[in-house]
Amino acid sequence: MSSFCIGLTGGIGSGKSTVAALFAEHGAGIIDTDAIAHRLTQSGGEAIEAIRAAFGNESIADNGALDRTKMRGLIFSDAAAKRRLEHILHPLIREQAKAQLQQLETHPYVILVVPLLPESPAFRQLVQRVLVVDCDENTQVARVIGRSGITEEEVRAIIAWQTPRAERLQLADDIIHNDTGLSSLAGQVAALHERYSNLHKSP
Ligand SMILES: Nc1ncnc2c1ncn2[C@@H]1O[C@H](COP(=O)(O)OP(=O)(O)O)[C@@H](O)[C@H]1O
Ligand SMILES: [Mg+2]
Image (cartoon, rainbow, N blue to C red; front, side, top):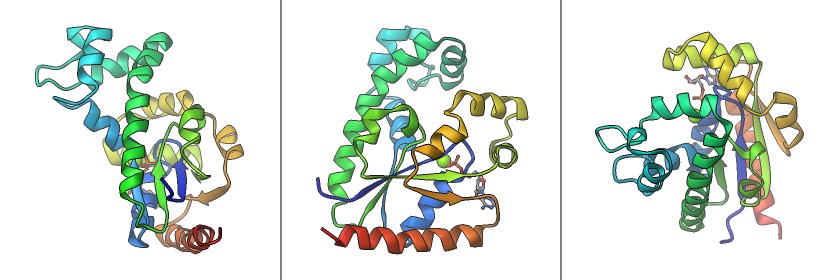
């Protein structure tokens, strides 16, 4: 496992997926832990039986996938339940991320998208560098409402639940400021691509 790996994190709606797509255009390998978590909890997914054992049949929807709405409601109001779910999912996510990292060895470097990087030392051990996408909270709210149609109140609740902005920024080796347009974003990604390509080459 020798790929140079950069952890990409940021709050909900900050622009992680958008930034990852821009890095992919430069040839970076991309691993998306949200996508891995989603697959693990689909019907027949590797986490389903462990979730059923821990949370009961009612946590699994009729189609065999995790009942996401129900689980979100539960872990929002119950910190112990949230930890139990993470205890099931996180080791599986890390295992699959490591496997994907090995398959992406031919790429100059890999961007590992991990929203919960600030909360998780185990995930930080997988990366050599931390890149934070940052933007104003009101911008986050407007973007998420535009993307998914959930209410402002719900977005603000999720933001309040995530690691505070200042704390996240303290972990950053590099920062992308995503308060303005997409062209500024592309310019920042291009500059970081140069930096990461050179870091990868130096021993
Ligand atoms: N600089 C930007 N200008 C305009 N829209 C943006 C910008 N960055 C992200 N968006 C939009 O905001 C929404 C949230 O971005 P996304 O990359 O999905 O965030 P995240 O993955 O961090 O939750 C998406 O609809 C995306 O297209
Ligand atoms: Mg995303």
